[in-house]
Length: 639
Image (cartoon, rainbow, N blue to C red; front, top):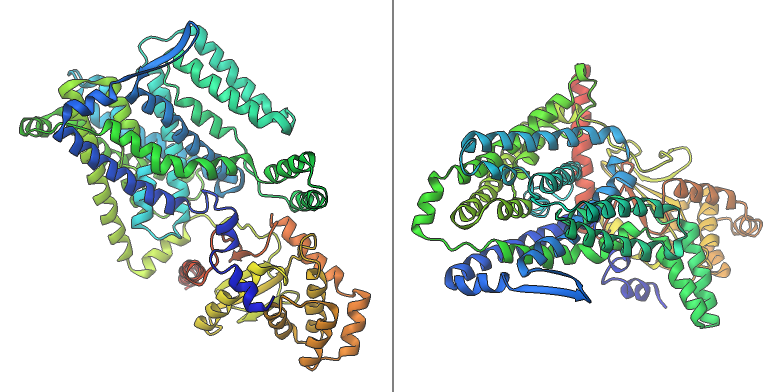
């Protein structure tokens, strides 16, 4: 197969897109689409409820029962959506938060404090504002409807109004939303549960303990057991009278995440080869279990559930709950209703004020606070976006009100979502127009990036293409026989040409996947042998241009083509002189959690996602902007 044929065979999608588009990597794109789907569902619900209000209510109040003998679960369709399907939504939220805690930006625990306190402030101030309008009145019991951020809607809007590189803000908002949801679920459980049955609740608590104990169970039956316990927990909470959606968040928060280990992937390759030679059911099951265990349960569940929750479950929730029969009298009543006003101002004003104030307090030196992870203007955007409350707000509204008051509460929720979106967009426009020196000073005051690359780039050792003092370093762990590395090379060459070597340097480190590519190790050693004769990059380019022919004789031919000392080159290859040098790169890859190729790091931060020209260009541009601002701030501080 020719080089062009190899690259073309994989040109449709990158390895990342073909194999593991885990939700953490495309979270913003999925949430943006999910927000659009939710908006469409809201509009559909409003149209339906106003065109045929009787059919709308008739459908969603239809009763559905699941019975087994004398026991069963029965409620209407709306509650099956609110308490059943929405459990999966909170499960995905918990999974994403747990992944950030295990392998993401929140693995440094000190960075959790600020968003947690911000969440508390973002809950408390809206409640106070709501009670200022409703204390002592008939709407006072609905205070919980003004406090909770809609995770899906807020992250979706954030993805639309901010660049995809705004990772810190996304992580901050996600952490805040998870704490916010946890508080909301506790409020639902204790403040909006009228009749609690102690025995089912005790059973649910025991099941939580059993779920935590599963970490010590054998892998073979841990996941089926966890699914069974999660289902039993949901049933127990349902029977207890406590809203069972809390079970989803609990399961998500106890499901660990970890990067794939290269040893696990190599073990799968061996089992797959054994199955190819002897296609027996036993070997098929072993290979299947091996590949499943290589990817954490956290990412597997996100991969399966996240599109369903974003595009089906949450829009279905909106369809079931957002329908309001709007009349002129309802609108005029809502404008002067303390319920509508309390919810609207609680979200649009209370959320950003509470979040920004609590975040500021959490960073004060006299409270031994840590440095903020995002600057104040960016925090203002996050606070405004957090004012979008829909899912949990409507959920609590349905528990608090009925009839006219419920309609007024829903109008307040919808109005707040529109107002908060406009406020967030306005804040974003203001931030874009801030002077560069102001933004640089603010950025310099934030916490430093957590680096994912274990071994820093060493100009004395690493192979560097471009200016050694460039602002941005793009480092790749690659395999000369890997077709995806060949595909990525096209984008890298175009990227490098567009920068003309200025402000960008490119570093190659070896990660030959010898279990699947038989010539990769020797090719890596050949590149090092050429490097000894000061011709690493020309050999590097030749190897990636001829991935279909990396046999020993071809390597000698390439050395001759480059004008190298072929006798010395061949002698070093046969003696495997540079195997230790390649092994050093492999060890650094293992230390950085790299299991496959190509894997990219940009200024020490791992690049998750596609590696086409557009995506890499955006990532490099974002890194360059941040590095330039930090350099400007450092220079100003020295003057």
